[in-house]
Each structure stands twice: as C-alpha cells, then as structure tokens.
Image (cartoon, rainbow, N blue to C red; front, side, top):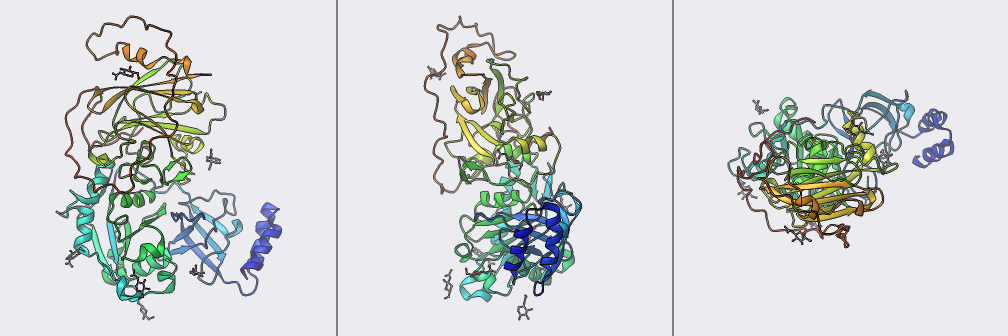
Length: 537
Ligand SMILES: *[C@@H]1O[C@H](CO)[C@@H](O)[C@H](O)[C@H]1NC(C)=O
Ligand SMILES: *[C@@H]1O[C@H](CO)[C@@H](O)[C@H](O)[C@H]1NC(C)=O
Ligand SMILES: *[C@@H]1O[C@H](CO)[C@@H](O)[C@H](O)[C@H]1NC(C)=O
Ligand SMILES: *[C@@H]1O[C@H](CO)[C@@H](O)[C@H](O)[C@H]1NC(C)=O
Ligand SMILES: *[C@@H]1O[C@H](CO)[C@@H](O)[C@H](O)[C@H]1NC(C)=O
Ligand SMILES: *[C@@H]1O[C@H](CO)[C@@H](O)[C@H](O)[C@H]1NC(C)=O
Ligand SMILES: *[C@@H]1O[C@H](CO)[C@@H](O)[C@H](O)[C@H]1NC(C)=O
Ligand SMILES: *[C@@H]1O[C@H](CO)[C@@H](O)[C@H](O)[C@H]1NC(C)=O
C-alpha cells in the first residue's frame, strides 16, 4: 500500500500545487488507513541520518510520530509556512504502526505559527516531572535502579533544594535564567507494559506515551498537567538498545535520558536535552556534529557557547559589538574590546560579527572569552582561558536577530572556528579578518582586538603595536612607546586553523563549582557576579 502511494506521489511530483491536490485521492486508495491529527510539530534529536518529526497531540498530549524520514510539508494548503513549533491540523496515510507515511500540503492547515511561547525566554522556572521507568515487564534485568531520592539528589543536590546537582549548573550557565522549581519537582516511578517496539526498536513515542499513561494513573491527570517539562528515565540496559544517551523534542517539553554515566548522571547531557526543548541544535567542530567540547550542546562538560547563550537570551553582546559589520570595522584598523569570561556575567559578554564585506557572506561569527571557573569549571584546556570563535548560518542568525522568529528552530549549525590565547594573533582568511588576544586586564577579562582587511592580514597592525598603545580610559599613564622599530609584517606563521584537540571525552568528575568570585579588576560592570541577569539586546 505504501508503495502504491509513493509511486503516485513520485509520478505527479513534478507539478507542484496540482500534484499535491491529486495526492489525496491516491492516499485514499483502498486499504490505506488515514489518520487525522491536531497539535504541535516538533523534531526529534535522533541522529541517525534521517529527519524525525512528530506531532504532540492537542487532545491527549500523546506523541504521534511520522515514519522515519517523513517530514511535514513546507507550506500548508493556504501557503502558510509550516515549521517545527507550528500548531497544525492534518490528515495522513499511516503504516502498520500508525505513523504518517506522507503528509501533503493540501491536507495540512496551520492553526498557529512557530513563534510559540515554548520559545526561549530569558527567565524560566521549570516544573519538572521526572518519570522513572521500571521496565520489569521487559525482563527482570530491566528494572529501574534509580528511585525518588537518588534522582532528586542528582537534579537538586544533596539538600534536595536546588542548591546543588544539575540544578546548580543550569542556574550558573543561565545566570539564573533557567532554574528548576524544587517545590514543584516530582519524581514518579512507573511500571509500564513492554512490547517489541520498546525492547527492540526503542520507540521513543511508545515509551513516553506508555509512561505518561502510567504516571497519570498514579498522579491523576490534573496534577500531571501542572508540570511544564517531562523527563523519561530509562532503566539500565536501554542505552545499548536505543543507541543514544539522551533524546529531546525540538521544540517541546519532553526529554528522555538513560540510566548511565553519560545519561542522567551527567549534567551536560541533561542540559543538552533540556536546551533542545527551546531550539538549540548540536554544536560542531569541522564536519563533526557534537565535536565542540566548549559546550554542553557538543560534548563539553561546559556551559553553552556564546552563540547558544545569545539564542537563549541569557547573554547580551558587549556594547557596540552586536553586529560588527564593514561600517563598524574600518579597513586595516583594529577595534578594541574588553571581554569578560562568559562565566562572570551574561551582560555584555560576546561579540557578533556580521562580515558583510565578504560578498554573499554565508556565516556570522560569535566571539567570547571562556575561563574554567564556576559553571565552566570543567571546560577543557583547548578552550579555557582564551578567546573562542564560532561561525553559524548568517541568514538564520540575521533573521532571528532582526526579530523574525519563523525559522528559529532550524539548525544554525554552530561550528568552532578557532581560538586565541592572550598575546596571540589569529588570521581568519575566510573572513578577511584578524582577531588578537591582548592581555588580561582584570581577573578573566581580556583585552582583544579585531581588524578586517581587504587582501591580506599585513594591512592590519601588529599586536605588539596595539598593545603598546596607551589604553584609552583606565591604565595609569604609560609612556607611549616610541614608534615600532619596523613596519611590522604580520606574524609569518599564523596559528593552526583548527583548534587544539579537544580534551578526552571522559574527564574525571568535575570538582564542585567554586563559589562566586567577587574579585577582579577591569572595567566591566557587575564583574564577578555569577547570577546576573542578561540584559535584553
Ligand atoms: C535509591 O537509590 C540509591 C542509588 O541507586 C540507593 O543507594 C538507595 O538505597 C535507594 N533508596 C531507596 C529508598 O530505595
Ligand atoms: C514553585 O512551585 C510552587 C509549588 O507549585 C509554587 O507555589 C511557586 O510559585 C513556584 N515558584 C516559582 C518561582 O515558579
Ligand atoms: C498492560 O497490559 C494489560 C494487558 O494487555 C492491560 O490490561 C493493562 O491495562 C496494561 N497496563 C498499562 C499500564 O498499560
Ligand atoms: C523494529 O526493529 C526490527 C528489527 O530491527 C525491524 O525489522 C522493524 O521494522 C522495526 N519496526 C519498526 C516499527 O520500526
Ligand atoms: C536481559 O536479559 C535478556 C534475556 O535473558 C538478555 O537477552 C539481555 O541481554 C539482558 N540485558 C541486559 C542489559 O543484561
Ligand atoms: C552596520 O551596523 C550598524 C550598527 O548595527 C548599522 O546601523 C548599519 O546599518 C550596518 N551597516 C550595514 C551596511 O548594514
Ligand atoms: C542557511 O539556512 C538557510 C535556511 O535554512 C539555507 O537556505 C541556507 O542554505 C543555509 N546556509 C548555509 C551556508 O548552509
Ligand atoms: C607576546 O608575544 C611576542 C611574540 O610572540 C613575544 O615576543 C612577547 O614577549 C610576548 N609578550 C608577552 C607579554 O607575553
């Protein structure tokens, strides 16, 4: 039946609108069961090379997955954009498991757009329901090893009040923007039925729908509905079946975690899944998804990188650094900024470069200083105590920055570009731009420079010249150094294009975060305050 439908679609696929009109009768061919659904579209972060889409049913809160690789149409029957986060009504033909095998434009109606309340905001207190799944029904070796108290301790710390555990990392990394409400926080252990879809296929929707039903039976539907976020803890043995440590809806309010050292026990995995619910995808190194070790959205035991902090509205750019373009970066002249390490404050902690001097530029660049303290205490050596640079899809980034949230759930593909230490010059030829690490001007506050050129880095000043300049407002009268000895060619050996090898994937368990530092010089307002709220850009 599925084949008949596919052939019909392929045959008429060439004639856009007409084809979609004609697809419906084909789908209604005898034997094909159609299903009508209404709810919110989301992607599922299964990284197996296919897109996975699901619909969160408005009527009963169940997940209705589309078959592997099946995606919703780009437009509904009236030409409205359909994206992740859209609330839609649709009808579709289904396979033997009830999953949509095709969704046509003519059978889809947009009910509400993608710019939904589930979007990132700068202040969220989650009310978490942790559903601890005991799959004894799948075999005695699939019973749960976590319980109410072990999960509460993991999430909220030994005191169970949010002053420790994963909760503290969320608070630190978000500057207080994303917290868990310890009063509302609830763990319920359920014993759902088993099936081969669970034990063989690790069907995320079969798992969550069954767990939800079991949790409602215990808590009551009314109480169940008071939570804002739902997390499914799978018992030991499922990591091998599922092939993932954590999973999330994007956007959404559901996450799945394994009972394993890289699953629910690891704060950065919990953070990655929780943040997916708000829209960030994974962070990359080169062509390797996940391989950015400077962020929990990659493989780092670290807070999100600047591009992600900005997306979450937890951090704002340095004054004057929100969109560094050709008019703000005069050719061959270095512009100076003092950047506080991101752990210090969310207020004014990054630069956003919009390289509009490059014809048809495809990528914007985010620049921030990272240091291995507080939330970033386990940040690896390749990224700590240096400038971190990331590039991402400029079209999507500019849209979002300019207030167009239509494609906010599309992957901007944040990718490591390079790093720079103090007293270090990095030429970025693809951007006709030089980034310089200057000196520390306060505790974890770095003076840095940025200079664009037209043909070569030789047009930009040498770092030694820049560092010899008297710094404008602060520093006590340094005698201006006599003019540089030579016309200063750019450093002949630019640093490697690729950042240093990331740290080993399994570092020792992080030391407890140090208390907020209130020391430090420099000119940044609010320095040393870790709970500071990010200002809106
Ligand atoms: C809960 O689980 C932890 C760790 O698995 C265990 O040490 C503890 O004894 C359990 N507590 C109860 C009440 O079962
Ligand atoms: C946390 O949850 C409690 C209990 O539901 C509620 O009274 C309180 O207002 C919540 N606090 C926040 C900050 O949302
Ligand atoms: C488990 O399956 C049995 C038999 O099919 C059914 O009666 C029961 O309601 C199911 N339990 C749950 C929690 O779904
Ligand atoms: C479940 O997994 C089995 C074995 O890999 C496969 O043959 C089957 O098609 C899968 N079923 C579904 C519904 O994906
Ligand atoms: C659980 O037991 C089944 C059947 O004995 C076995 O096939 C499976 O590998 C076991 N799983 C684990 C995680 O030990
Ligand atoms: C460059 O950025 C400034 C400040 O954001 C803005 O006013 C200006 O329009 C931009 N220039 C161009 C060419 O977009
Ligand atoms: C950026 O995203 C847009 C919209 O999804 C896409 O069309 C474009 O190809 C992407 N650019 C790059 C360089 O991947
Ligand atoms: C900065 O680097 C240059 C050349 O790499 C070196 O000569 C100089 O001593 C360094 N300065 C400091 C303060 O480390």
